[in-house]
View 1 (cartoon, one colour):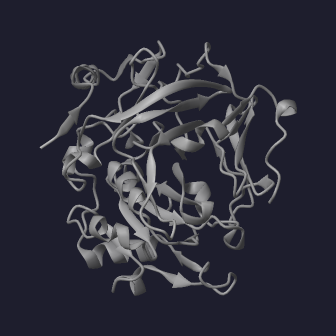
View 2: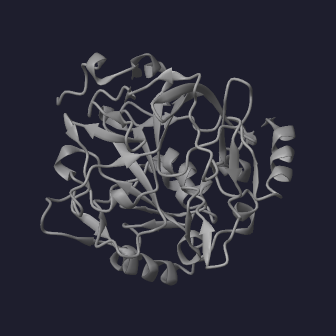
Length: 371
């Protein structure tokens, strides 16, 4: 059996460092311990690093497949996603997977669309429920694994969890909400709290301490970030006053249907992945296991990174270790520290990495027009 093991020494050092509530991060500042708890019922979110009520931060989050074609926009509830994954699917379009922990009061979430195999790995990295309405055949084996907390609209539980609205045309009108999701969780008998294994990792990311933001002072200027998706012409624009990036696509700002407000993010990760076609129909087999390069972007700056898992089993794609956390490392081999807040992860086909653009100011950016 062939296995790849990476960064074991770092993993041991990190585990020891988390014994304290604040330790030194890779950028030279302090980081928070995700297991830190306050006296008033607040805990550190595994998704943002911020203090949140324990009833939110320690209850299992959801990963939801969001439709991202123009006929389905704007999405509902996406502004409540603390983390968003964007990846290409067949036909060059992108599909989003939002990870939400604070959605109890959201009127509706969606529209919900179908699964592709690589998103299952992302959802399981965060030990979440995985919500989708349909799937490519290549995802079925992953969805049927006992440790995949699958909540499919095509299974019997679908009538409990999902409904169709009348303000969008089918198939772009499938939605869900907190109460329906919890009813589905109860029906399936799924756990409501994070696994001990996930808790032992202190969450997925390392976050900067409250008073020690990451500035990437030696990084490349990145006032505008273009991940190179040609179909929706997506890009992000940095606002130095808020310290956040605003998301644009299809020639306009991306908003949430329920709030009308623009989507903004504190961190952007570009993760370059090798890939191949599953078949002649264009279904993509994106390799999210073997490691690669990318970029980390925050506060108007960008650095090159590499990404990898602690261990992968190349002969058994469904082996448990393949669902472990993906780590991102700077040029010195240190795991990166994210700023507290929301994160958008762009999965970029490595053959398209030359289409990624970082611009020092908005004046030098000429892309982003609608198709």
